[in-house]
Image: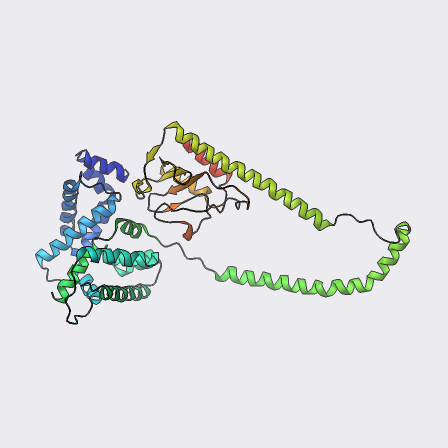
Length: 183
Length: 240
């Protein structure tokens, strides 16, 4: 079923919307959540919570890309859950945090801004300025939490090239954040 | 705020990336890389053979003319005494060939124009029939999910959408990207056409197949090729 019809079901308050969403995007959402939490059971719960959130968000929202809309919810719920539970073991979030810390400009005394809207705008403009392949690598790694091996398969690049590309992208993002005085 | 908190803040901000960029990444699959070595060697060999042949001919022909030219002139003088030994001036073989090629080209341009017009009129007729969905803007289209055929009359005209089944998409894609080059004096397209494959990729039958001719949103384009007759027949079957 196409996205428009599934969204129509949400708007009509028809519970089939959840079944159809799960049929079409369930696997992708579980994989996203599991990559962050390293636990299938937790991922399952996060995906179920995603549908409840999506149910509450519509009819106010009318997403054009239902997959992206649901992914955002799953990612947020999974990260919140990770924070709540303070897991000791190194999960996917730990790995991402460790890599992303390289993007944080060094603290040189001034009070950096924490404007979430400005950071989102900077991220979007940073990504759109990149060639498609690099943009995809960044999003797959830091939004979808895909392992390097999977990104390498999808992009037909060697794992070391993917790692080098990600390193350069983090450097570039750090420079942008520094220039704008963000973070 | 310490570095760890800032990193977490950045991680959360990444959650606000544009939906279109997320859809692009989720549906991205690299095109299989082509291996250029064998075609390159074949091209080099072909070039070497052609160069050797041309060089040999450039030596043999002048020598042949030098040796046999005088003899030929003598023979002509004997055979055509009334013309003073000159042959009648008639169009050369190359001139005849050029004329034929030009006529063929014109004929082919006309045929291509007819195919293009038949596709445009088919789509316009179907737009009027009311059997297809109409959207106000391209942002209303669903790029991921069901494949569809999308068309627009003129640059600012209405946008029509006809959902395609997987089988229909497969047949349309089979004939895409292989038409003849658009003629230099071809009029501008009156209807623009796109195919949305349901996996986030957008293509058009008016461009050759290639990574640069595919995008994740509707894009404007200048036609490179004319859709083949097979493709027009295929679309006609789908619409009828």
